[in-house]
Length: 97
Image 1 (cartoon, rainbow, N blue to C red):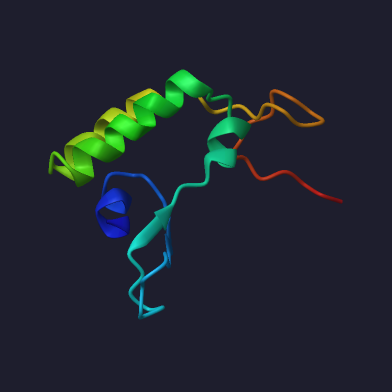
Image 2: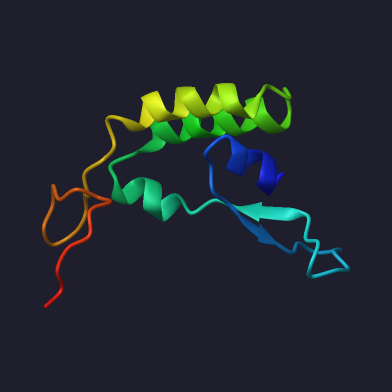
């Protein structure tokens, strides 16, 4: 599941869930929703993200097609929110010293 989502541009972590036997082959995934919140997404956007995931994992749509839709969706979410210096480019490297 994690690899399919990655091909669509959705990065998740593989996590063990109860009943898993092999830590190298976990059956759970984790989505870092705090990062989505940090760039300004709220409840309605989480529903869109969930739909992207459903289309890849359940509906078996082509991850490459979904990736293009995700790129378009993400255009409005490039600035950092909920931080000391709101409005910074969320993915630019800043000089720390």
